[in-house]
Length: 392
Ligand SMILES: *Cc1c(COP(=O)(O)O)cnc(C)c1O
Ligand SMILES: [Zn+2]
Image (cartoon, rainbow, N blue to C red):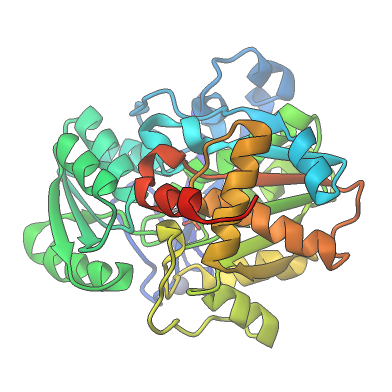
């Protein structure tokens, strides 16, 4: 089995690019997407064949980028039935996809494993990234594993756990006054002069490829797609990735035309996608003064805004903003009922499900998958607040 990668295609203007050189965005500014020869991939990537392969995301090798995988065993996380939490929320068929146990404690591992694999194969020497926290930790880990240098720019108020993790994994850390978009400007400025390869969200084509594997795992684990997928969206890599994977799986004969309703959850203090969705807009305006305890959701402007909004609308899904108070209360509910020590971003999906159920948007018997995207262990400050808050 080998990768059936064929070319890159601009998600905005459709221009094709060769996949065998290091490249960021299309010249029109649009994110590039990986396109495969899916009929070739389907010959070896059958459900039966994949079922026999080791339980990492590299079991989907045919539709991942080529190169010797740089891996820490990422992928194939548990899909946990959440009966007790479901009973609390009035849902009979609720599941938690628990990404908290990934290498580096978040699902960013999937994207960075794919990106670093491809970048190393194409000769990159130094990888650079702006990050709210977890993407930097994951990049530092996979760069170390690949023997490449790594530069990480983070907001100065990023939780200590993320800063220390990057340093521990050998990255050079730059603390920037501002939010992730300011870090992005910093990296973009320096990258040219220093010959760094930028691995920023959607500026790099293969992080999506790593994260899309979450969607393929759902099909393997449930035997079919769920009715609803509830995802905490910052840059939207996972949402866009899973949506892309479903198309690929249909073309490969794994699934039919049905799709889950895709739900993007954001924090009330930074909800550009929710606002754009509610306005019926095709793209999102940048959010002023983003603020939330769920640091992975503190993304005021996303390059993938159009792709996210398209997936939400085409799937008949929706977008929901929840407050930090709701997030902290939901985190405790998830912990107390299911034994999952969640990241606040993951808890946000539980808060959103509560809202959607109360509003009647979710039916009692809908099969709903929420994503816990990271481990609570990286969020001591958030958890201190959650545990000092009063209430159940
Ligand atoms: C980065 C991050 C998110 C947002 O992920 P995107 O795919 O970029 O939208 C959510 N949760 C956690 C824990 C994160 O680190
Ligand atoms: Zn283009």
